[in-house]
Image (cartoon, rainbow, N blue to C red; front, top):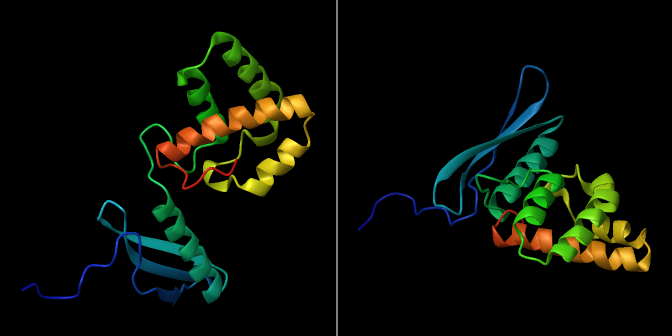
Amino acid sequence: MTRGRPATALGTHGEINTTQLPTGMWQAETRMRLQSGKRKRVRARGKSRTGAIDALKIKCRDLTDTTDTGLLTSTSTFNALLDYWIDHHDMADRTRKIYRSCITLHIRPALGDVCLNELNTPMLQMFLDSLSHGTEKTARAALGGAVSLAVKWGIMPTNPV
């Protein structure tokens, strides 16, 4: 028979505690059980008690949705993912050349500096809608391939493309 409190379920956090700091800011903290089973203390600050709690919940959500690799993390830029994907994905040389051109001319200027955890479907759809039909098809294929790799590695929870 085991003693004590049962373990928190994977990917969940415990009670949230808040404290007002001497600066007037609020800090919220909790302990979270990661998908690996390890426990981690998570803290966030905000201008109000509610703001700190909301920021903490976002941090916890981001920790449960993804699994960072040594090479890329959920806060890596889209440029970093594109660089890895275009060099390592198995495709014909002509296809690689076409994708590289589309990435350089269209995708990088519009989305390259966005972090992977910030990418979302409306953002990508607005970008794709701004392109001509042929360029849109190529960009969608390149975006989908790169983001699929991030989902496969667990860096992103779903593919917003």
